[in-house]
Image (cartoon, rainbow over all chains, first blue to last red; front, side):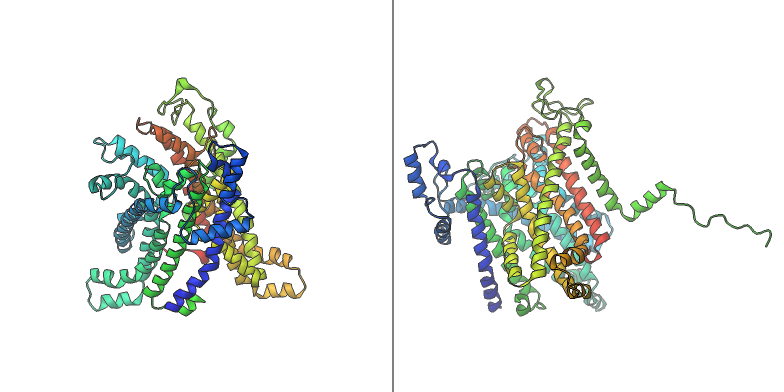
Amino acid sequence: MIRYILRRLVLMIPVALLVTVGVFALARLSPVDPVLVFAGEERDPAMLDAIRHQLGLDQPLPVQYVAWLSHAVQGDLGRSFQNKQRVSEAIIERLPATFELGLAALLISITFALVIGIVSAVKRNSVVDLLSTSITLMGVSFPSFFLGVVLILLFAYVIPGRIFPPGGYTPLIQDPGANLRYLVLPAATLATASLALNLRQVRSSLLEVFGYDYMRTARAKGLREGAVIVRHALKNALIPVVTLVGIQVGAIIEGAVITETIFSWPGVGRLVVQAIPSHDYPVVQGVVLVSALSFMFSTLLVDVLYAWLDPRISYESAAA
Amino acid sequence: MAGTTVPIALRREQTDWLGSAAYFLRRNPRMVIGGLIVLAWLVAAAFAPWVAPYDPIKVNVIDSLQPPNPQHWLGTDDLGRDVLSRVIWGSRVSLRVGLISVSIGLFVGTSLGLAAGYLGGKFDLIIMRGIDALLAFPALILAIGITSALGPRIENAMIAIGIVAIPAYARLTRGQVLAVRAREYIVAARTIGAPPLRIVLRHIFPNIMNALIVQATLSTAFAILAEAALSFLGLGAQPPEPSWGQDINYSQRYLANLKWWMSVGPGVAIFTAVFAFNFLGDALRDALDPRLRRSG
């Protein structure tokens, strides 16, 4: 097992290096001179040259890349052009809000996917099954920002009593009640897209497992239907679901970009969206790099978890 | 024998168009429904100047913020622009981005996949590591990164979405090439001295066409959704050009005043277009490529 993980880690290195080249190239592709952005109102050529030198932008590109990478490896992603805050600090400050939103959304998504998925697989062609297939179909095609707008309209303005606020945030430690009220709409919005995928997976893998011989054996030896489903069917059917959810954990930042923008949720996604119009490349670079690396690591974790959950998967053949 | 009647026609002639259509609809409901909605959007986009009742960017303050009525079926926005006309013209942006970005992904991805699969060796290794690196980025984050670097313009959004689409085509093509490369007819073509390009284009490519058509349909759905998301974030089409994602973003400032119609038009448009391409793609997958059929 440890050999397998080490091998996967070694194989990840060249890909991770290519990712860093890509992220570095992103900022250099821009037609806008970062020095002008950094300098703000300053247009004195001597000052601009000084800034260029200070930022290391007068060096050849490979030298700039190595310098940037060696800083990034030590956790230094540069400073924001706008407020000169350290990018790593800015990201760490906003990560708790993003994780709170992402985890709440996953919790909603998994709970609903399991309940509806199990009922729809057990009672095929019932009303719940029809509901489940409709959610799957609609959820994949429904743009999350439109759903967010509809939810705001309904729950913040149309339904009397203004149940939930249209946007904003209160830290959990400060006021848990207020935090929850702000959390409900964005979490529901974010949950919908992954609900469609999770629900489809729960339903289809349960249906597959129902056809296996050990299910018949379990029933034949007189187990109650509930025990058959929970102990025999679910245990095996959930392996692919775990994979899917693991990948979604890695993609939390991606999912949060749109939702955080609609609901003014002060997370990493909103940080990158606010950095774009002001050409704040260090921030954009930092967020893109962090989200790509977290995505890569979660994929690795999922593979390891998958091999651990399903003993039929041999580490050696999977590594090859 | 003399008194027996001989049926003139044992089978009814195939002139019953309605019957045939009903039969096809019963057999392939998803393909028909998805195809018809896609066709409707294509017609709306192609004939926008004739289909749209008003000029989509002409400001007409007297008519501002009207709810849906017989003159303006989907209402008007704060500048008095007809929402229905903006939705119809917006389909041009969405479908153009879908078409062009999918073409970029298809062309680059398929070429890389063909080259990696056919040539193999170091070439394969280098290309596939590059593809792995592209796959390491969450799709929307990569599109946002590229568009913000190149500048917020619709052409750059197309490039970004095209680049994001490359890995799917490259992996699909490479896999298929590896599967058919060792078949007898390819070996035979090589034996009679056919040049590699001819083998790839005449013998390998036709084998992967079906899978590519399915992938292209499904990735058009993704491209439309991604364009809407980028435009929503201000990274796609720029005002006053009508664009579904951007119009939803714009409508947000009137939500508190309950001007719901400003967002419903473009929202439903995105949903129907994405839904139709997904539906059609799924149906095509079942029809053209039974090996890829999903369970459940």
